[in-house]
Amino acid sequence: MPGKHLVLCPDAPRFTIAAVSDDYLAAANLQRSQLIGHGLFEVFFSDGRNDAVAAQLLQSLTQVIQTREAHPMADQRHEWPNA
Image (cartoon, rainbow, N blue to C red; front, side, top):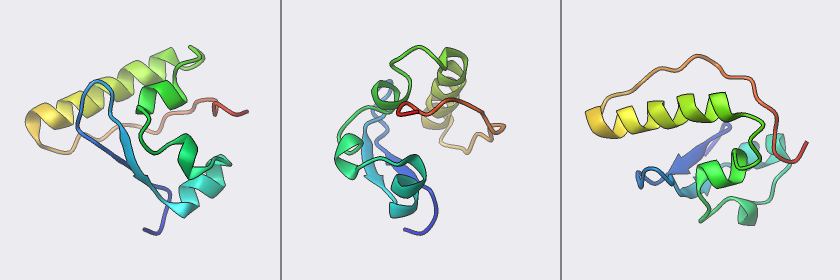
């Protein structure tokens, strides 16, 4: 899977990470085992540093599940959890 991608399960509100591309792992300096099987928000937003971004992302993902349509979201800047 080329590019920086995460594949999420539609198990709101957890959004379990089901797959991750090698490019994503390299960019984030993370290991696959740190992501696969874990909830998106527990991995990337549990420290409280990016609560506004987390709220917007949760709303967007929830809307996609409810409407079954893409929901464009503006680029979001946030701190990486391992920074």
